[in-house]
Image (cartoon, helix red, strand yellow):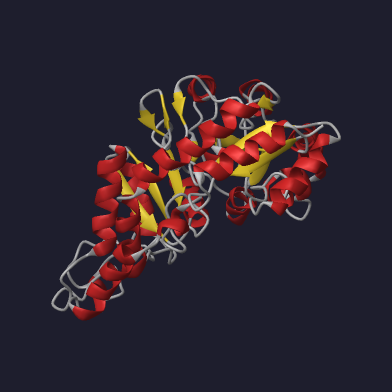
Length: 375
């Protein structure tokens, strides 16, 4: 949250310009004589400037970004890719879609990848590691990076739910070889659907750029006469999505600031009453949700209160079946389901309060006080 909450006249005005002043070109490539802007390319440049990355490629979804990035890292059918139990199913779908095997790692108190369990999961077949910075919070990246470096395994960071967060002064997504972002309608900034790949590695970028556009090398001004080294696919972003993305990116810092104000109210009142999700010391989060552990009879009362007050819960527990690998039997083997059990039990004791900007600071203050008084 809450990119969709801050959509206003700014987005509408910029979209109107596309049709009223820019000839309504919706495609990211070609039509040079008709168009006045290349909005997708402009959006990519703005993301590079924001994150201080060398390269950015806008694509059709965060899921597509994961698949393209894994292929760019050299992952192929039969290889193993390690990711974590608390996740969105899209990560495993992308791994499985290229014929690789998803290996599930336990979570630690950050609710992200457990570095100690990661060591145990690495085999000769491991070709990539995907730590997922769930709900705005970084994994313990210093330890994960050391393990990956020692084993010479590339890292693809899943930043779909943490765009704007940092670790040790770097934006999440730039700690490993490549990072993937989602801009779907539930993310911190949105283009409706859409995603991006960020990297400082030219080879990864060049592969991704070609693959997402049917293999086009874009060496020639005429796309009809262009060359290709390999088969690709169509994972392109549209100009309309990019226009929305440019406006939303300009709102990101304000969104995080306002998220933080609400998050800190919850933290101040509830941290003495409950065990709160661990935040890595060297990180800054995006304050997507306030997560705390409740393993008593209070749990059902708190969940009921959140529903009554119109907050609900974010993934924990409302959509846990889509965000915990224990429930993905249709795509994982029995071994990986067993590997997910401990994490599932841990997640089942947590509640995530979503941060909404349309909920006032006073509403969060009142909510926190009511939760703190539940017996």
